[in-house]
Length: 520
Image 1: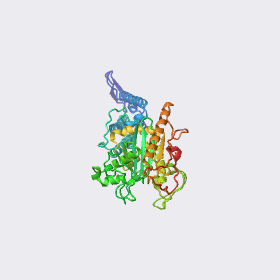
Image 2: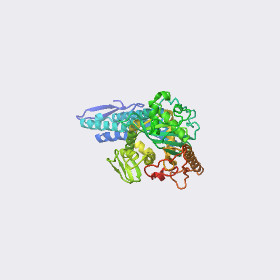
Image 3: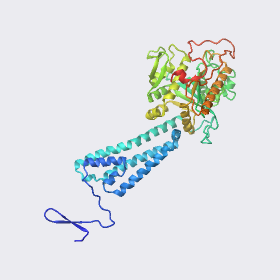
Image 4: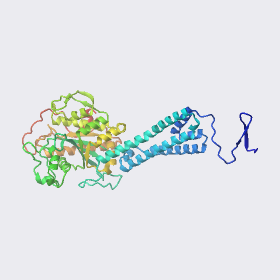
């Protein structure tokens, strides 16, 4: 018998020769103790956390150490990448290419972890178990495979939903009348210190033809600090003017006077332009006509617009779990008589339907009081839609957003817009409404409106400069923060005595912090 052979005794006195491994050959894996059903499941589960652990237990040390080393290198790389990034870098994921990269990486990680679990299970040799043990371990390991793939699949699903929402809302082709080319990624706003967005609340109910713009607010945002001024214009503002560059200027040289004697309201401009493409020089020019009219009224260039469907907004509020709002007085809602219910005064958490009616209810109210409530709803949403809330409810929010908006903001500006939104959340937001007794919609004083808008922006800029000088961000509603207070003279450009608003307007004065006005 060769010295390399080992003689083992077997029952009956016979001897069995077991060849010993030669030098340089890999010994067959040997276990300290026989593996049981529980140990196979345990070591396979451990491999889901530390890939290679099962291979070490199975005696395949080289493979196990390679897997552990590769896993440690990936973890260290991910940690280093995370430590070198801040919150503003996350907004870069809003770009289409970045979202596709995340989807591919998440899918690859899901498949890789599935493979790790499978090979770890096979390495432990489950065929050594009895039939019952093989069945039990197979079922448990299958469930484990699904469990380890789920986080990656969920991530891919979230990002895919976000990508679909972005592609559905933001046009891939820029507005031909407002083309956007990002020449310098460090300055996507092309040197502008302020960008002006027209936010339109559209009421396209099934019993109406076209879109009725019930809520119109201009958000003038400082691109450096995020300080924002909200200008709220009443839907019944009459006889707005158009700039000489607008096709409607020639048709209405003395202001918009369609459907007189009771017409000529601001909320009719959008639909009028859509209904008269021969005047506008093309179809679907309602947004451009309204941007021209409001921009000329405030003496601002309106860069972009976003039409927000009222009922889509209700779904969005439900998606983030409702809005907490301070209700000044009881508001009846539902229909013309408030038969659906009453939103009681005090701090309330409103559902999407309640938040919608809180901003729209006309029961014992008028347009100007509605405008005050609407700006509080906007402010509450901007404050409470935090990154944590958005991530927690991302799929719901993405689904609601696709039914929510129409805009001319091009896709290349989505990531810069997300950066700007982060600045706005921590900046000072003030609001100015053009309502009685300071402003009258029936006989507007255009010079006074422009002067008030100019002062509100100047005060917002001054607040931003003071904050930068102190190396802090101006907090909403901080004591001593300057606010615009336009003149209260009642000289009218067209003469005559204006008619008072039917109900007392509680939002008097100039631009004020939303924290002060709404108790956010």
